[in-house]
Length: 228
Image (cartoon, rainbow, N blue to C red):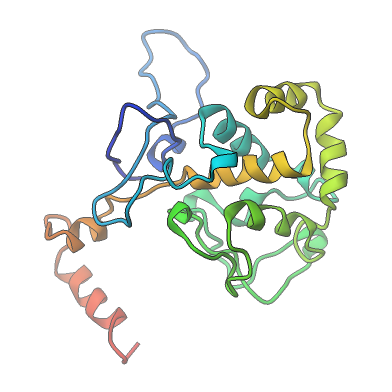
């Protein structure tokens, strides 16, 4: 989706990597998917890469982002085993929900839709009302919300602890068995790794209009005007 500036000294999962992160291991002749781990700090972004902006007690590592990615797409984090975080934050739509109102378990609907979580590493508050101040704080709330995934974090942890592969992954990433804290930290790590900083509009803002033609310019003018 976007190329990212790479710092070889740190690791992070990039949005461009996510599009090609699955592999069937067909053999050495097959083109390899991009590495899942690069640190990114796109031009024009606030100071500090996404790795540098991770909290001290949840440093962004490959193991943690990989675990978080698995959790993000696991419907076992909903009461009915029906939906995952990725059901609403759809990768094909920049990890947002294209529907006006998001749908939770058993077809329940709330009053808002799931916004994009791309570049959330640079956010200062989360949810439409800004009630969460960290990605770690945000991560557990959709799981417990009765209109969304409707599962207590304690029940989620019980489910994860019953899966030996998850137990091993949590041990590898956090040195402990699955817990409410490490569950939220892992999800936050995956979200923190979703970075896009070289779209046609990003480049336009930096003065490169090679892929920002007249139609897009007219759309930008309309979008930023009071007419729309």
